[in-house]
Amino acid sequence: MRRILIAAAAALPLLTGGCLAKTAVDVATLPVKATGKAVDWTTTSQSEADRNYGRKMRKQEAREGRERKKAAEACKKDPSQCGTYDGYRADGSGSRN
Image (cartoon, rainbow, N blue to C red; front, side, top):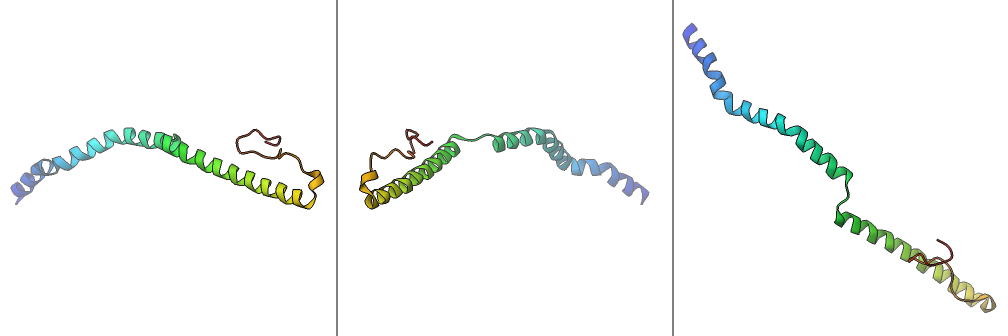
């Protein structure tokens, strides 16, 4: 009985060797993977930058449209106060930026 127990204990590292090797590789590559994830989270890809820029421009153009509409309505109410539109422009060329 004792010999069987000793033989089983001796064979245990051989039977679990694959699992231990995989764990050692996982532990060794973990810092590299963690660093890669951190870099991904802190940097902006070109597609994300393009998407964010497009969203920003759509918001600015919507704002310009609202202000132009207000200016047109004010012009209808009092035509003597009308002139060229010099309010907000989405391209940044207006008097109010």
